[in-house]
Length: 592
Ligand code: ADP
Ligand code: TPW
Ligand code: MG
Image 1 (cartoon, protein in one colour):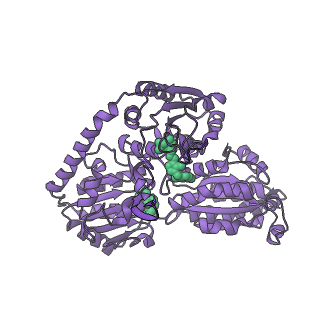
Image 2 (tube, rainbow, N blue to C red; image 1 turned 90 degrees about the vertical axis):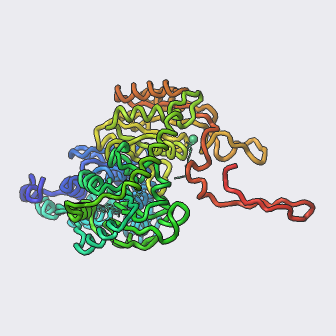
Image 3 (cartoon, rainbow, N blue to C red; image 1 turned 180 degrees about the vertical axis):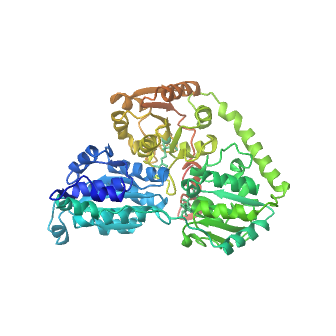
């Protein structure tokens, strides 16, 4: 429906409309198709009417999971994912996901019902009273409240544009319950709706910035491209490929950019990460930030201080120099910037010295060869490599599968062992490393892509959103969950250091059967103690498309504290004394 249709609508003089319908019409006019939420006062009827009016409404068991679904829907579609919640507690439950979306630069709109404005502002104790707008503000890109039905159209338009333009992010839209019941003339109502034209306009880089970037790249002896999830989000896949291939420069994909170019690509430096970061002299950042995931662009992982020069492509000007000097900032959208660079490289582009590209390739191939036997490990109970070998073979055979991944060891081992072959197929914990995104992510991945989903989950990670297996069964989604069950967080072997009866804080019930949770709601439960059984169970699930949960038994001693990021744990100090005299001061990291 375009604006003209909406304005004339099906309405004739004398018809009236209300806040419910104006909100629904405004969302539909702006191409929103799916709503992820949890019903209750004051938005129960809104959900029903949305469904009646042709929106797909997915009802969750907890708002955080609905919010995580909306966040990843935004990443996958470049349109705002919409989450709908009730007031105060429901709103707060949705807020973690809104902040997560904002942190990851994904467009999302959290729409929450709220209580009587007059009562809230006088703090008179309304049902679920809370000043939601004030609370949302610091956690998202923009926050709006609508008080009058005739403003609903403009409010939705502002929310959509704020979410997707520039650096994408989360937007909060506060809908006081009373607004939904307001009535107005239907023709005027239809005319009040606003269709956002060109919501994320192209942003072309300045020609001098392109030239500066190219000069820096040309000066490099050992250049490296880093592709981030901003590049995957941009959906400029062909342009990215053309730039990488024409430049001849090795590239490193960040976690969710894996598959933007297939991991088997000749220029991939994925398995030579340490060498590539340490030895490169010019690094071209493409939709990736120099945050903790790249140790802030300095320190041990990198070459000598100030020896690496950076070119950075980002839509957000303030991202430049966030951690180190950026020699050539290229501000604009990925597609415009990379097209301009590729064009400016011209016909006689000289690819980097073979000495460098060969060194990266050799290191990568050696590392891949070194890892290969571990992926064939058939031991039972499984270690991570054995289990992930089975998962890797499945993804290699079914490259279209949407791959969801969370946990600590389960995440870090899977990232390095399971190759991705297509863009935006690896969906994980993002910039914050949030546990609990798994089921919301899996549900949105299935709904938005219509493709089979494989979610590989640590047993702890799964527990954060595990109740959504009911949602998966209810909507009969083609999702196969594999729980890597090592009886705990990082490992299942920790003991209570006080010797008491309580288990250690990181361990769970031994030998739990997560597969039974899926069976409880009519899905398929499977139990795998070795890689062959795991391979079989997952293959069957992908073939049948039935909701499935495979409980994969992992050796409780196989994992490392905090997976790959144990070094981020604070150091504790133990002082050993004998008779009041200090014998030794021992500094130690968490795991022992
Ligand atoms: P990763 O974790 O993969 O390194 P980040 O989330 O840290 O990626 O960085 C993504 C970056 O991409 C953000 O700085 C964001 O501003 C940028 N970005 C998002 N969309 C676009 C786009 N269309 N064009 C350019 N930059 C973008
Ligand atoms: C919202 C802290 C990081 S990883 C993890 C926790 C609790 C679970 C690791 O255990 P899992 O994986 O999933 O069983 P594995 O294979 O190592 O055993 N709360 C939030 N986010 C984070 N990151 C944490 C806590 C954490
Ligand atoms: Mg675990």
